[in-house]
Image (cartoon, rainbow, N blue to C red; front, top):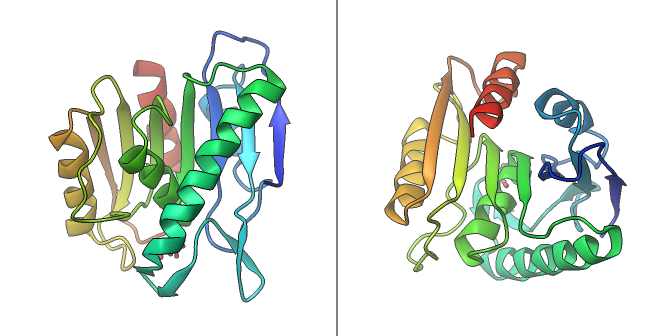
Length: 200
Ligand code: MLT
């Protein structure tokens, strides 16, 4: 997968896995990594799917309607890429925190829904429920920050609450943070995520 790796000053810190939103690329979220932990290694990945020229992490059939088969395939592909990248760059595979926005948050949530040890934790900015009706792995010891908007038309407040409940039902520790905004990622939300990271 097309990506950027930046080795951090402190190898005991987690590696931040950056996952952009629809139409973004691996450069977009680099300022977030700096804000969250300037000493951590960063692996920023570009989604392998194109929708009208816009990079994404998996196909969708319509706005908010996921191509489930492709989601499963792309989740596996990303998980395997993480295994390869950890070996190639020599970072701890068991200490990855994802930082995703929108479509990137959805594939991060999907990694956790499908693979118990894919991530140590995740900062999910405006995620949706990636899949319903499947058994989730036990996520004891994993921490998740969900940044949501009270007026987000894409990731509705109900869906944000549903995602929180699903994670909690398999023992993940979840903080749901609200902004009185829509789908956009705000400075305040990034600050709240950075604060959460420091306390977890
Ligand atoms: C998705 O397709 O993952 C969601 O609709 C969010 C987005 O617009 O990327």
